[in-house]
Image 1: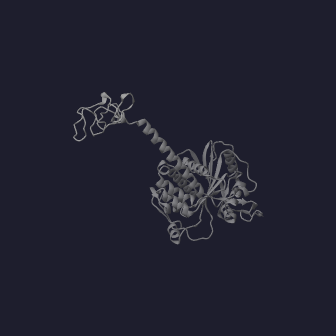
Image 2: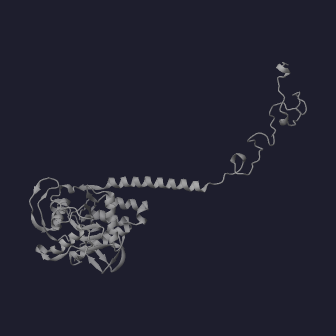
Length: 393
């Protein structure tokens, strides 16, 4: 055997504090009580770190065999952050999806000689008799007929200001002056065609001439324009699961398809369209416009609820149904649209006023003449942000 310096041997002596008795194994030439230095598989109780025979201390150290206590504060914090991130991503995604579906097709910039801006915001909400996208079967179901083009079926001014919301229906048979105007497609200037029924303005040159005519005859500036056709109206009602209405009396009108018994009931899309279009049985255009106001306010009230807004299975079908057929001005955004619906909802809850444009009597061709003294007072109150005291018809 080779000797090492200082008399050392090739195999160092083990630390006496770590020597444990071993069993004698034949053929190894070992001495009893001597650790050969080879691991023979015995477990050294209490020696080393992390040995399988080691016992935990019971103080929650996972490395010592104890369970780590649950940090509920941290879990709640992480869960809350995750929820907020998901909600933010969902909201942003929904916003851009909805914004891309808005049909910004009306250029109010071509409207001539516009009135000065006043207090608050004024929307012109138009229901047209457009059959765009309706199949023959659907036209029959909705009792729309198959007329070409589109005309105004209802017109409502919605003014939102510090003194509350005012909803003013404009009878389509109102006798007004259609002023000179710039063509929406040709860009050419046209002379005034004179006095006509209000709905003739839309038939002649669409939304921009309608806006021009209303502003010219009232002096009230229109900030935003929103229009929806028959099909889109019915789809929105169906998407929210119908609208509950209190029908004032038995109604039956073959032309609109209205067939209702008196009392509170839920109207589906086809029934709702028949209700707001009912004109001949109603007896006058004024009663018809009042029904339209009541229904639109009820529709907004049932649409702008947590049950719809927070439920994607109702929110997306509702928004899709409305946005696919809703035509607005080029400057109208989703927040403007939401403000419009929220304002209509307020009328239902008693926070606003609903009325018809003040009427002075009849005019040529079975039309209605506005009471211009009351109209001017009404417009002044709206523009100046004052409480509306004028009563409509």
